[in-house]
Length: 444
Ligand code: ADP
Ligand code: MG
Image 1 (tube, rainbow, N blue to C red):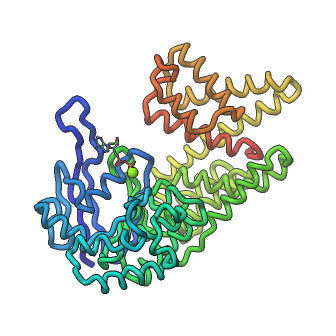
Image 2: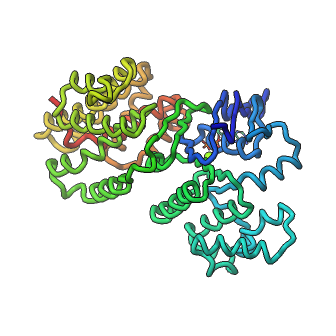
Image 3: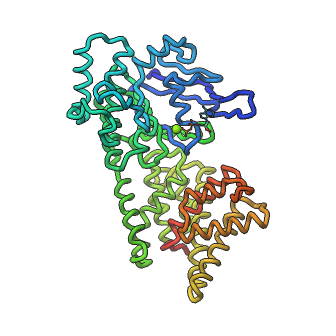
């Protein structure tokens, strides 16, 4: 099949040559095929929006080129570009980008006017049909702010479709929505792909949505690190929201549950988090299988060497089917996390008889040592003390994960720890996983 979008060696560099030069994306190569549903996944700031804007023709590549079928977007003049944008691309944004002074209907009609449509009746009919399709027709004459977030995003989607654009680009379209409205918008996107044959490219930093896509591009530091093909994406049933509910419920009832109950209840969730942590170039079948093995490993039903063996045993023979090096890497990562969890548990047992305060202090010391040993290696004493204090606050849940990483990242002079961004990411991720698995993990 031939591509609908092709990007070759594209980079976007802001403020090139200046002191504040910033490379938003570099060396991007990808092809997207007609009627595909593709997601771009990665942490905030990794360049997802820049990549999407490049495809939309809203951003010009500093190097490389962007092609839509036979047309080279990166070489179009501004008239060609705006025509291209109006007829080929529908964009949906996290913040809806609606005009506050126009009615709901007029917001939807707007791209028709840009296209030069003079037939008032026809464009009104088109808009109304879309508003009906999305269940917001009764609000057509209101202004957008009178509607809920979910409804406003549906206006955004109607606007993205009114010129019958074949490609929909959605930049974190559900980032501002509650989970019910988010699901509604995701369902619409899925239907637009399946029934209306739209090519969809959606940007997200939420791993729960990824299985809806045919393909996922993972991004980091401005590059595509790998691509995952969800071959059976249509047949996979959604379990994520249930797991989320389970975890929320658990988190809320935390104090009331015995360790044994937590142990049983949290295993599926822990396994999911761990497998997401390890997720790279695996397909859905492999992911499901690795999740099962991690669960067994955590429950102590698989020994370290058995777990390692199942990772590179071929898929046909009941393994995950990873290549040797990847299997070894995954096994190492998994054991490291289990090690961290064990540390906490052992410590819990050892100091069970002491005062609560003392216990927490010891636990904090151990975890801090573990983090420094794993990720930092060399550190000033003052930094160490600060890190230990911070870890203590996080373990006692006095601060959340976000503040924790923020302080790690802030310069030392400003009261932070002043760590490298990549180290910050690793430490935060590991500590959160340790916090998640600290109860009930039973190994050896
Ligand atoms: P994401 O959408 O993944 O959060 P972005 O594509 O918005 O990431 O940004 C990628 C990188 O480029 C970030 O480091 C960001 O700070 C930088 N960046 C984005 N837009 C600009 C701009 N207009 N000027 C300078 N730097 C920018
Ligand atoms: Mg963005």
